[in-house]
Image 1 (cartoon, one colour):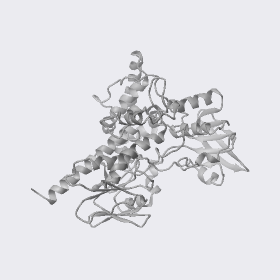
Image 2: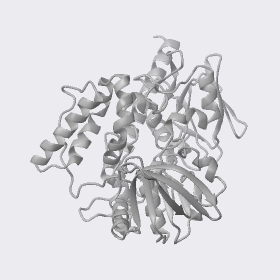
Image 3: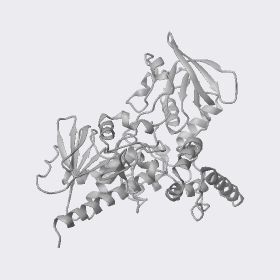
Image 4: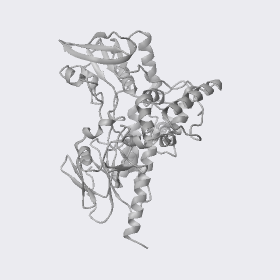
Length: 478
């Protein structure tokens, strides 16, 4: 279906760049909000449907949501909507592994994308949201508005722009990318379609990274019948944790006397975990409470302490906060038990191609002597390189060069205010340019988990709606 043409009247235009969960969520809630006068909402997204994005467009059966379906929703005030959507359609009938012994559901990740797409589809069909199936190539401030060019030759003039782009791709450490680029089984970006097709069943595989992406890769390889040895190396050798066997109550209070430093916060969390254990509550309940109070905790920390937390404590937070689905955890446990998966704390010092092999020098964290290892394949799973976001898209780099964007000082994304308005190098915020989703987490703290992403999308939609109402009042005073 061809998108309807944009209005030529004074109707305000809101452009959302990126149609994954963040962008689709902003469009969905904005279309339903009281904006004073109905805006034209344009979402730039090359994919066929809105709402899937990078995470939920996967067809890999090993990729599962890592949060119980009962806690997944596009509606911050109706967390059960996705579960109700599944049950109404019997959507996991062909996926017997989705339901866990305690009754919780961890369906394949693609299903959540289908759910979000189903909510956006009627809005696209009735014209409330316009889906422009194109990639943005340039965004320029011009005569008080934003001029947006796309790779299909289109030019869109917008009053407000929300940047909701995808995570930047991972970056291979050190010189690996250049030294191994010519090898057919060097996988630098697992988000590319069929990236793992090059891995053969008996290959010896080095996985660089040990978080959620690494867990997904190892589970995907097992699904494909891979039975060769796998080494997963990361600086601290921390493996993503799983969910508790039964739901845990939230435990602890970290807000009433918010920690002024990263060390104080860490001590408080450790003390709470000890106290929780005494009451029969696992660490999950403590970490979930920290997450629930995360915004206030983050706001209480000075920038220098935020940096210290990101530099020293983020890996520990990530493996406890971003838990793997039970099905994926079972695959990893089985691989470790069988001796096929080795979790190593250390770094890749060097690598080179020798014929069909990849020779790697690994430096274990607690040993002086390096290890020389031969692998058939190397896979990079170090996670999104948010600190390099400006280099991933030319139009983002141009916005930064023209004074509209700058990196957040914590290195987690783009700088923005507590209203999510983009901040330029001068320190001045632009009320017509907003940052939506994980790229705003330098300001908002925890913005990687689905519940926080949907809450932030709802928040952004509310901010835009308020701006539009104010603008309408100014144009048409009573």
